[in-house]
Length: 295
Ligand code: NAD
Image (cartoon, helix red, strand yellow):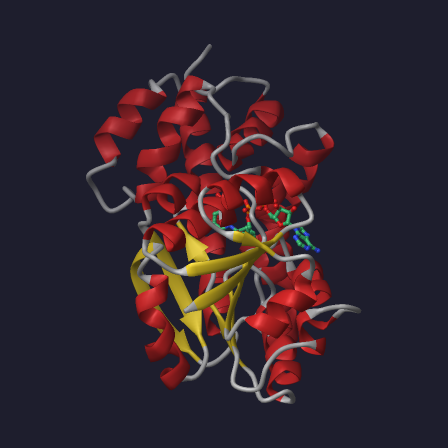
Protein backbone atom coordinates (compact mmCIF):
# COMPACT_ATOMS: atom_id res chain seq x y z
CA UNK A 1 0.00 0.00 0.00
CA UNK A 2 1.29 3.50 -0.81
CA UNK A 3 1.16 5.88 2.16
CA UNK A 4 1.56 9.64 1.88
CA UNK A 5 3.45 11.15 4.83
CA UNK A 6 3.61 14.90 5.49
CA UNK A 7 5.72 16.37 8.33
CA UNK A 8 9.16 14.85 8.86
CA UNK A 9 10.27 16.58 12.07
CA UNK A 10 11.60 15.18 15.35
CA UNK A 11 8.70 12.72 15.49
CA UNK A 12 7.63 12.29 11.85
CA UNK A 13 11.07 11.30 10.56
CA UNK A 14 11.58 8.21 12.76
CA UNK A 15 7.90 7.27 12.40
CA UNK A 16 8.19 7.37 8.59
CA UNK A 17 11.36 5.26 8.79
CA UNK A 18 9.53 2.63 10.85
CA UNK A 19 6.79 2.44 8.19
CA UNK A 20 9.50 1.90 5.55
CA UNK A 21 11.05 -0.86 7.69
CA UNK A 22 7.62 -2.53 7.91
CA UNK A 23 7.54 -2.65 4.09
CA UNK A 24 5.16 0.22 3.24
CA UNK A 25 5.72 2.30 0.13
CA UNK A 26 6.00 5.98 1.21
CA UNK A 27 5.52 9.23 -0.71
CA UNK A 28 6.76 12.04 1.55
CA UNK A 29 6.63 15.83 1.79
CA UNK A 30 7.99 18.49 4.14
CA UNK A 31 8.94 22.13 3.65
CA UNK A 32 12.32 21.17 5.19
CA UNK A 33 14.19 19.60 2.27
CA UNK A 34 17.00 18.17 4.47
CA UNK A 35 14.43 16.09 6.35
CA UNK A 36 12.95 14.88 3.04
CA UNK A 37 16.42 13.92 1.77
CA UNK A 38 17.08 11.82 4.87
CA UNK A 39 13.82 9.86 4.58
CA UNK A 40 14.26 9.44 0.81
CA UNK A 41 17.71 8.02 1.66
CA UNK A 42 15.92 5.41 3.78
CA UNK A 43 13.73 4.34 0.83
CA UNK A 44 10.82 6.82 0.49
CA UNK A 45 9.87 8.74 -2.66
CA UNK A 46 9.64 12.53 -2.64
CA UNK A 47 6.40 14.30 -3.59
CA UNK A 48 6.70 17.62 -5.43
CA UNK A 49 3.90 19.07 -3.31
CA UNK A 50 0.99 18.22 -1.01
CA UNK A 51 -1.36 17.95 -4.00
CA UNK A 52 0.64 15.06 -5.46
CA UNK A 53 0.18 13.13 -2.20
CA UNK A 54 -3.60 13.69 -2.32
CA UNK A 55 -3.66 12.55 -5.94
CA UNK A 56 -1.60 9.37 -5.51
CA UNK A 57 -2.25 8.01 -1.99
CA UNK A 58 -5.24 6.22 -0.53
CA UNK A 59 -3.83 6.63 2.99
CA UNK A 60 -2.27 9.92 4.10
CA UNK A 61 -0.54 10.67 7.40
CA UNK A 62 0.32 14.09 8.81
CA UNK A 63 2.70 14.87 11.72
CA UNK A 64 2.76 18.66 11.92
CA UNK A 65 3.27 21.16 14.78
CA UNK A 66 -0.26 22.48 15.51
CA UNK A 67 -3.78 23.19 14.22
CA UNK A 68 -2.83 26.09 11.83
CA UNK A 69 -0.26 23.93 10.00
CA UNK A 70 -2.64 20.96 9.72
CA UNK A 71 -5.41 23.25 8.44
CA UNK A 72 -3.03 24.81 5.92
CA UNK A 73 -1.83 21.46 4.59
CA UNK A 74 -5.30 19.89 4.44
CA UNK A 75 -7.71 22.76 3.72
CA UNK A 76 -5.45 25.60 2.44
CA UNK A 77 -4.71 26.61 -1.16
CA UNK A 78 -2.98 23.66 -2.86
CA UNK A 79 -3.97 21.51 0.15
CA UNK A 80 -4.99 17.85 0.24
CA UNK A 81 -8.67 18.77 -0.05
CA UNK A 82 -8.12 19.82 -3.68
CA UNK A 83 -6.81 16.47 -4.90
CA UNK A 84 -7.85 13.84 -2.33
CA UNK A 85 -9.46 10.69 -3.77
CA UNK A 86 -12.91 9.48 -2.83
CA UNK A 87 -12.51 6.74 -0.20
CA UNK A 88 -9.09 8.00 0.97
CA UNK A 89 -8.19 8.08 4.67
CA UNK A 90 -6.29 10.85 6.49
CA UNK A 91 -4.63 9.99 9.80
CA UNK A 92 -3.54 13.19 11.53
CA UNK A 93 -1.03 12.25 14.24
CA UNK A 94 -0.22 15.86 15.25
CA UNK A 95 -1.31 17.08 18.71
CA UNK A 96 -3.89 19.73 17.82
CA UNK A 97 -7.13 21.25 19.09
CA UNK A 98 -9.88 18.57 18.90
CA UNK A 99 -12.27 21.24 17.60
CA UNK A 100 -9.92 21.67 14.60
CA UNK A 101 -9.86 17.87 14.07
CA UNK A 102 -13.66 17.90 13.80
CA UNK A 103 -13.65 20.85 11.38
CA UNK A 104 -11.05 19.23 9.13
CA UNK A 105 -12.87 15.88 9.18
CA UNK A 106 -16.17 17.52 8.22
CA UNK A 107 -14.56 19.17 5.17
CA UNK A 108 -12.82 15.93 4.21
CA UNK A 109 -16.09 13.99 4.38
CA UNK A 110 -17.59 16.32 1.75
CA UNK A 111 -15.02 14.78 -0.63
CA UNK A 112 -16.00 11.24 0.33
CA UNK A 113 -12.81 10.82 2.39
CA UNK A 114 -12.46 9.78 6.06
CA UNK A 115 -10.24 10.93 8.92
CA UNK A 116 -8.80 9.70 12.21
CA UNK A 117 -7.12 11.95 14.77
CA UNK A 118 -4.31 9.90 16.28
CA UNK A 119 -1.89 11.93 18.45
CA UNK A 120 0.90 10.11 20.25
CA UNK A 121 2.62 10.02 23.58
CA UNK A 122 6.20 8.87 24.10
CA UNK A 123 8.50 11.44 22.50
CA UNK A 124 11.44 10.96 20.15
CA UNK A 125 12.97 7.83 21.82
CA UNK A 126 9.71 5.90 21.47
CA UNK A 127 9.19 7.25 17.95
CA UNK A 128 12.61 5.80 17.07
CA UNK A 129 12.06 2.37 18.62
CA UNK A 130 8.45 2.15 17.40
CA UNK A 131 6.80 1.99 20.83
CA UNK A 132 4.63 5.12 20.78
CA UNK A 133 1.17 5.16 22.40
CA UNK A 134 -1.57 6.22 19.96
CA UNK A 135 -4.84 7.80 21.18
CA UNK A 136 -7.29 7.60 18.32
CA UNK A 137 -10.61 9.21 17.40
CA UNK A 138 -12.79 8.37 14.40
CA UNK A 139 -15.12 5.73 12.95
CA UNK A 140 -14.62 2.16 14.24
CA UNK A 141 -14.35 0.62 10.74
CA UNK A 142 -11.66 3.12 9.69
CA UNK A 143 -9.82 2.50 12.97
CA UNK A 144 -9.93 -1.29 12.46
CA UNK A 145 -8.48 -0.90 8.97
CA UNK A 146 -5.67 1.44 10.10
CA UNK A 147 -4.71 -0.17 13.45
CA UNK A 148 -2.14 -2.61 11.98
CA UNK A 149 -0.40 0.28 10.19
CA UNK A 150 -0.21 2.36 13.38
CA UNK A 151 1.21 -0.71 15.14
CA UNK A 152 4.27 -0.40 12.88
CA UNK A 153 5.04 2.80 14.85
CA UNK A 154 3.57 2.12 18.27
CA UNK A 155 3.07 -0.53 20.94
CA UNK A 156 -0.30 0.77 22.13
CA UNK A 157 -3.12 1.85 19.80
CA UNK A 158 -6.41 2.68 21.58
CA UNK A 159 -9.59 4.08 20.01
CA UNK A 160 -11.05 6.61 22.47
CA UNK A 161 -14.22 7.57 20.55
CA UNK A 162 -15.35 9.59 17.55
CA UNK A 163 -13.26 12.17 15.68
CA UNK A 164 -11.57 14.59 18.12
CA UNK A 165 -11.46 11.99 20.92
CA UNK A 166 -7.78 11.25 20.25
CA UNK A 167 -6.79 14.88 20.72
CA UNK A 168 -9.10 15.30 23.73
CA UNK A 169 -7.31 12.34 25.32
CA UNK A 170 -3.92 13.88 24.48
CA UNK A 171 -4.99 17.18 26.10
CA UNK A 172 -6.08 15.27 29.23
CA UNK A 173 -2.62 13.68 29.27
CA UNK A 174 -0.90 17.06 28.90
CA UNK A 175 -2.99 18.67 31.67
CA UNK A 176 -2.09 15.87 34.10
CA UNK A 177 1.61 16.05 33.23
CA UNK A 178 1.83 19.87 33.55
CA UNK A 179 -0.09 20.11 36.83
CA UNK A 180 1.86 17.14 38.19
CA UNK A 181 5.23 18.82 37.46
CA UNK A 182 4.01 22.04 39.11
CA UNK A 183 2.86 20.14 42.24
CA UNK A 184 6.17 18.27 42.36
CA UNK A 185 8.14 21.54 42.10
CA UNK A 186 6.04 23.18 44.83
CA UNK A 187 6.47 20.19 47.16
CA UNK A 188 10.23 19.86 46.61
CA UNK A 189 10.68 23.59 47.26
CA UNK A 190 8.80 23.22 50.55
CA UNK A 191 11.22 20.43 51.53
CA UNK A 192 14.24 22.52 50.50
CA UNK A 193 13.12 25.59 52.47
CA UNK A 194 12.23 23.45 55.51
CA UNK A 195 15.72 21.98 55.52
CA UNK A 196 14.78 18.44 54.40
CA UNK A 197 16.83 17.06 51.51
CA UNK A 198 14.64 16.94 48.33
CA UNK A 199 16.40 13.76 47.15
CA UNK A 200 15.40 11.96 50.38
CA UNK A 201 11.83 13.27 50.11
CA UNK A 202 11.68 11.85 46.57
CA UNK A 203 13.05 8.47 47.69
CA UNK A 204 10.64 8.31 50.65
CA UNK A 205 7.45 9.12 48.73
CA UNK A 206 7.97 7.74 45.23
CA UNK A 207 6.59 4.27 46.16
CA UNK A 208 3.47 5.72 47.84
CA UNK A 209 0.26 7.31 46.57
CA UNK A 210 2.03 10.48 45.42
CA UNK A 211 4.46 8.53 43.26
CA UNK A 212 4.04 8.70 39.48
CA UNK A 213 5.79 8.21 36.15
CA UNK A 214 6.09 12.01 36.03
CA UNK A 215 7.75 12.06 39.47
CA UNK A 216 10.21 9.31 38.51
CA UNK A 217 11.17 11.09 35.27
CA UNK A 218 11.21 14.69 36.47
CA UNK A 219 12.30 14.75 40.16
CA UNK A 220 15.89 13.71 39.30
CA UNK A 221 16.02 16.42 36.61
CA UNK A 222 14.73 19.11 38.99
CA UNK A 223 17.05 18.09 41.82
CA UNK A 224 20.02 17.85 39.43
CA UNK A 225 19.20 21.18 37.74
CA UNK A 226 19.13 19.40 34.36
CA UNK A 227 16.52 21.02 32.14
CA UNK A 228 17.70 19.65 28.77
CA UNK A 229 14.61 18.68 26.68
CA UNK A 230 12.79 16.17 26.51
CA UNK A 231 9.57 17.96 25.96
CA UNK A 232 9.95 21.71 25.60
CA UNK A 233 8.10 24.44 27.56
CA UNK A 234 7.10 26.02 24.18
CA UNK A 235 5.39 22.79 23.06
CA UNK A 236 3.59 22.44 26.38
CA UNK A 237 2.34 26.04 26.03
CA UNK A 238 0.88 25.01 22.66
CA UNK A 239 -0.89 22.01 24.24
CA UNK A 240 -2.27 23.94 27.24
CA UNK A 241 -3.45 26.67 24.86
CA UNK A 242 -5.39 23.99 22.97
CA UNK A 243 -6.67 22.54 26.28
CA UNK A 244 -7.93 25.94 27.47
CA UNK A 245 -9.52 26.68 24.11
CA UNK A 246 -11.19 23.23 23.96
CA UNK A 247 -12.28 23.59 27.61
CA UNK A 248 -13.89 26.96 26.91
CA UNK A 249 -15.68 25.66 23.83
CA UNK A 250 -17.19 22.64 25.63
CA UNK A 251 -17.88 24.47 28.94
CA UNK A 252 -15.32 22.66 31.10
CA UNK A 253 -13.48 25.05 33.49
CA UNK A 254 -9.72 24.39 33.78
CA UNK A 255 -8.51 26.55 36.71
CA UNK A 256 -5.36 24.51 37.44
CA UNK A 257 -4.40 24.38 33.76
CA UNK A 258 -4.81 28.17 33.54
CA UNK A 259 -2.53 28.66 36.53
CA UNK A 260 0.24 26.41 35.19
CA UNK A 261 -0.15 28.11 31.79
CA UNK A 262 0.75 31.45 33.43
CA UNK A 263 3.84 29.83 34.99
CA UNK A 264 4.87 28.62 31.53
CA UNK A 265 4.28 32.08 30.05
CA UNK A 266 6.55 33.65 32.69
CA UNK A 267 9.22 31.01 32.01
CA UNK A 268 9.04 31.72 28.27
CA UNK A 269 9.51 35.46 28.98
CA UNK A 270 12.55 34.49 31.07
CA UNK A 271 14.06 32.74 28.01
CA UNK A 272 13.26 29.16 29.10
CA UNK A 273 10.93 28.23 26.19
CA UNK A 274 13.40 25.68 24.87
CA UNK A 275 14.00 24.08 28.30
CA UNK A 276 12.39 20.79 29.31
CA UNK A 277 8.98 21.25 30.98
CA UNK A 278 10.60 20.13 34.27
CA UNK A 279 11.90 23.73 34.28
CA UNK A 280 8.54 24.66 35.85
CA UNK A 281 10.72 24.21 38.97
CA UNK A 282 12.65 27.32 37.90
CA UNK A 283 9.47 29.38 38.41
CA UNK A 284 9.42 28.27 42.06
CA UNK A 285 13.17 28.78 42.38
CA UNK A 286 12.74 32.39 41.27
CA UNK A 287 9.82 33.00 43.68
CA UNK A 288 11.70 31.54 46.65
CA UNK A 289 15.14 32.72 45.53
CA UNK A 290 16.39 29.20 46.32
CA UNK A 291 17.54 26.25 44.17
CA UNK A 292 15.90 22.87 44.79
CA UNK A 293 18.49 20.30 45.90
CA UNK A 294 21.44 22.48 44.88
CA UNK A 295 21.91 25.01 47.70
P1 NAD B 1 8.74 19.35 14.57
O1 NAD B 1 8.61 20.83 14.62
O2 NAD B 1 10.08 18.73 14.82
O3 NAD B 1 8.22 18.79 13.14
C1 NAD B 1 7.20 19.37 12.39
C2 NAD B 1 7.55 19.20 10.91
O4 NAD B 1 6.47 19.74 10.15
C3 NAD B 1 8.82 19.95 10.51
O5 NAD B 1 9.69 19.09 9.80
C4 NAD B 1 8.29 21.07 9.60
O6 NAD B 1 9.20 21.44 8.58
C5 NAD B 1 7.04 20.44 9.05
N1 NAD B 1 6.07 21.42 8.57
C6 NAD B 1 5.60 22.53 9.21
N2 NAD B 1 4.71 23.16 8.44
C7 NAD B 1 4.62 22.46 7.28
C8 NAD B 1 3.87 22.62 6.09
N3 NAD B 1 3.03 23.66 5.94
N4 NAD B 1 4.02 21.70 5.10
C9 NAD B 1 4.85 20.65 5.25
N5 NAD B 1 5.60 20.44 6.35
C10 NAD B 1 5.49 21.34 7.36
O7 NAD B 1 7.64 18.78 15.59
P2 NAD B 1 7.62 17.33 16.29
O8 NAD B 1 8.37 17.40 17.59
O9 NAD B 1 7.93 16.30 15.29
O10 NAD B 1 6.08 17.27 16.72
C11 NAD B 1 5.04 17.00 15.79
C12 NAD B 1 3.74 16.86 16.59
O11 NAD B 1 3.85 15.79 17.52
C13 NAD B 1 3.39 18.12 17.43
O12 NAD B 1 2.01 18.33 17.37
C14 NAD B 1 3.87 17.75 18.82
O13 NAD B 1 3.16 18.43 19.86
C15 NAD B 1 3.59 16.26 18.83
N6 NAD B 1 4.40 15.49 19.79
C16 NAD B 1 5.73 15.77 19.94
C17 NAD B 1 6.48 15.05 20.86
C18 NAD B 1 7.96 15.36 21.08
O14 NAD B 1 8.52 14.89 22.09
N7 NAD B 1 8.61 16.08 20.18
C19 NAD B 1 5.89 14.02 21.62
C20 NAD B 1 4.53 13.72 21.40
C21 NAD B 1 3.81 14.47 20.49
